[in-house]
Length: 82
Image (cartoon, rainbow, N blue to C red; front, side, top):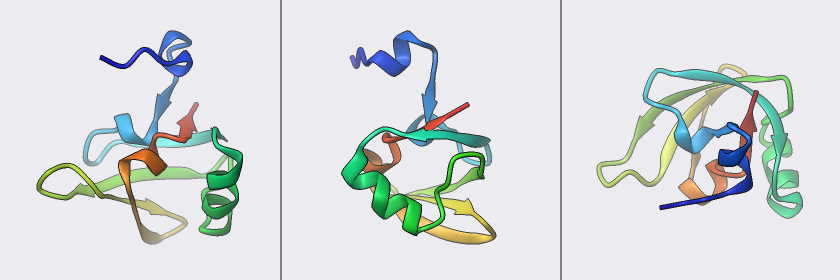
């Protein structure tokens, strides 16, 4: 069972979304990964929608800025939602 600071604050990450569910990006947790995600369009204030999950749950695809982006779960966990 995970017990992260974000869960204690009630924050969700992209990893926590269900298929078809949307959220608005609040911030990016990992500075190194954050730069990569920013370059791919995951900018705070942008809406993201979980599009699909692979058969074993990893990777996932999200829709951001009208395109589909594939992420590993550890990457998706660093994208916090409002």
